[in-house]
Amino acid sequence: MDAGRCTRPFTDAVAEAERLVAGAPHVRTDQDLVEGMQYLAGCIASTLHGAWAPVRTHPVLMQGTGPYTKMGLDNPDTLYYGCAVEAGCEYIVSGRRGDAADISFQVIGGSYTDSEVPPSSLAFDDRELDIDSGGAFEVRFGPDEGRAAAERNYFALPEGSRQLVIREVYSDWGQALSPLSVRVRRADTAGTAPAPFTVADAHKRYERAGRALVQRVRTWLQFPEWFYLNLPVNTMSAPRLTPGGLATQYSSVGHYKLAGDQAMIITVPRSDAPYQGFQLGSMWYISLDYVHHQTSLNNAQAQVDPDGMIRIVVSERDPGVVNRVETLGHERGYLQFRWQRTSREYTPDDGPTVAVVPFDDVAAHLPYYSQNTITADAYAERIALRQAQFAERMLG
Image 1 (cartoon, rainbow, N blue to C red):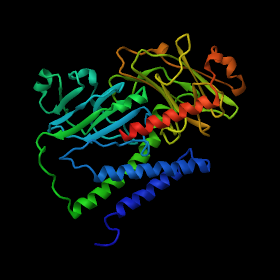
Image 2: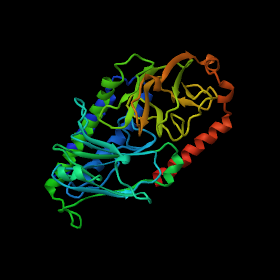
Image 3: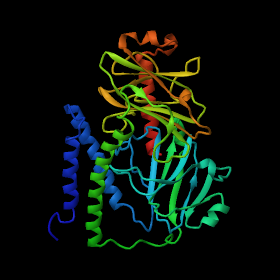
Image 4: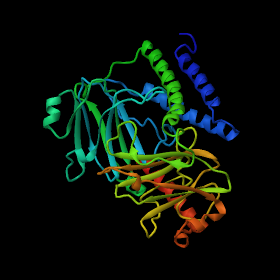
């Protein structure tokens, strides 16, 4: 075999993806480019692993995005799992629920691309399941529509179904010590082994990884153009059902541009939903470093003022308040709220209001400022707690 023959489609794709990253319209500084190369490294790792690890006949749940393989404005509070499915087969998903704020299931009919958002053919959270007193559950996805109508834990896979995605969402990161335990098997192949790889398979998998890499980079450069950058800068949309078909998730989105002497104050009611989270994203449409910095806050982490409002200060400089969200040198970026496991329609009254103010005037715009302040040592303790809980969650 010629040296490099199998891998050449993938190495060619890496070169093309690098050109896309280097030529992205928001690349203006060395920091932008370095972050792009870091982002590309995660994309390479994820797509190569995704092309080689799974076998369609013997599905296994994998993390398509994570802390080191970020994409799609990944939520710092969420662990994502997924596998390929086919409409004519039956899949058994079993496990133990754990203590997450929300567990949701979604079946997608295709892949995200730079030209379309794939249709969501099925979406629900674990309130739709019968779960025993110990948290154990078993849910089946298959072709039998009659059985789906009769059995609570059976769901019909529509024609064109391609992916099963499971999201495990935490408000209190400490609860990740009792995580979701889950596995998937295909009914007709359980107990058998997949066919061994051939040389032809090797070619196909490197080609598949290359296509997936370039498409992934193209997609997540385009996605914000549809849903974020078409909004006026330094504003956020009213809550809306999240694009992509998540059944019980609302979101509010926007993009910001702040000078070093400015701060953004975001005010939002504390929600009655089990999960409410806010985060910043870079122009690569991925989360900022949420382990060593406070670039996200959820309803378990944020301080609530006596009037029931959460007031978040987005800034580069430190205002010395509990709910500061750090921009980490990013003059521009994305803003995102999520409400999950909702049980009612969300309206503009549930959403955020946004004000950009001079940094030196932050205190004057916080009606409970004296109760919002935090010392440098106490803030460092908050970061240390994030670091410890993240390490435990990832190990779990």
